[in-house]
Amino acid sequence: MAKTKFKELSKYDKIFRIINLSVMAILLGVIIGLTIYFMTIKDPNNRVPAGFAMMFAVVAPYLFELVFRTRISNLLFIGIEVYASIAGIWGSLLNGYNQFFWLDIVTHSIMGYLCAIVGIFLISRLTDYKKITPLAVLFFCFFFSMAVELIWELAEWFADLFINQTAQGIKIFDPATGKWAPQVTDTMEDIFCNFCGGLVFIIHFAIGKFTKCSLGINLIENELAKGVKESNSQKVETIVEAQKPEKTIEIEEKNIKENAVENIKTKPKKTRKKE
Image 1 (cartoon, rainbow, N blue to C red):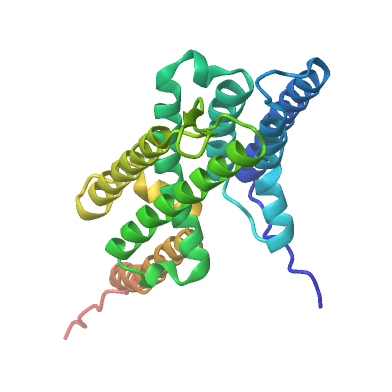
Image 2: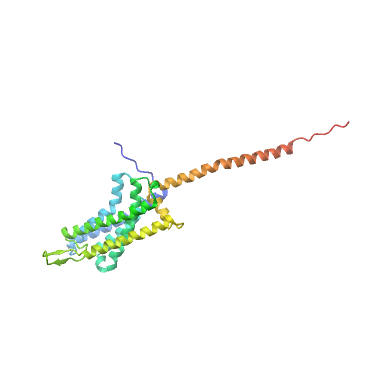
């Protein structure tokens, strides 16, 4: 079976792809360096697993492209890289979550919004985006964001329980079981923040689609939704084609009038014979 060829990138996309690759290489180098450092000092905060997780997160978009043979928008790459810098490097590896209480709130709120935007990319690959109502897109993106948060919290619980992490905060002692267990409060706060981020997306998307003020939603759809940009290009071409006959008729009418005037000017005058 022949491999599907990648769609050729435009000059604009090639420039941004080079920038994204450069940023990815820098982030990957920083994460690898910090992870090696934590391994050598036997980090008491046990941040080595977080380092390996962030390495995978940074290269995941490129792995996705190679496996599924489909291009990912540069907008998604930028979002992933920004989130990896804030949540992964600053929050986890540099211990920012323990130094700034508000950082966890900010990252989960941003995650809720970004995952909803990823929903636009995903749903356009699953079905014909042009035939879906804006309301259906809105609900799909919101619930997709909440589903990602659910998986995220399960991963944090798994890491805390089996890899001795503190992703859900400092563990508390449960006298009933005689074991140390993660706090439920942190999980609920994370889910609520993700919910708020998804709610911001709902408001943004609703204003952009149901009012005359786009707020950048059309730009996001053009970048992420498969077929939208091509559809817009086809509409422009259709309009141009529809205008061509009218212009042609106008030109032909103008030429006919000009020729008629010229014929009148150049037509020899008849002289009356004298009797």
